[in-house]
Length: 216
Ligand SMILES: [Zn+2]
Picture 1: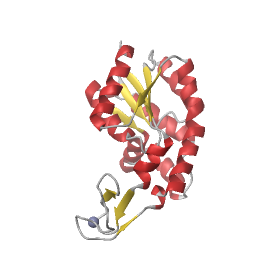
Picture 2: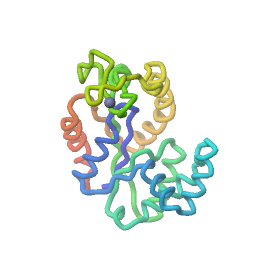
Picture 3: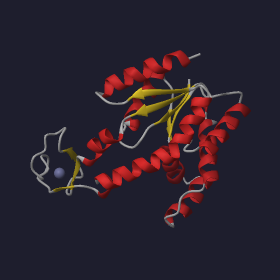
Picture 4: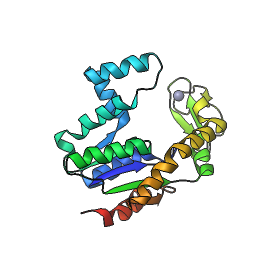
């Protein structure tokens, strides 16, 4: 099965990607992993990407696309894959479609994890990070009443990324980028949405039920 996973920050996408890929016995391919592998492996593309990252610039689309192409050509991806973090926009989706078409392949399904904005804010803005050991606690889910780490006693703080204002801004950026992508795949008739609230195992189960009809 060839599957793309999309979802907002705080939807638990990384965790679900892992479980769904393992349930389907396909590799989980995330752009983050591809980047790290290319940079640490010192590939030509990795070196090129690093020159941009070292300057604090975004890695250009064509470099990302070349890395994805390389990864998808590997043996373990021939019978299916779960892509996470790519495509990010309609232009990339069209490139992916053409790439797969050249290989006689096509996407089977695009799974969208659906969580409403207030729930994402509740999940992310409640996070507190330990300034000493880096462990993350949640004011609500861990019933954290003081601002000390239970593991090491270090002081807890809220990362800038987790501040409500920042989270809401990230959600806006996500919606702007992803809404056209989601409707592109809806037009292709391969989009399914899954409610990503509740326990992790239930979300995985819902996802598996939703994609089953798309298996060939
Ligand atoms: Zn700590």
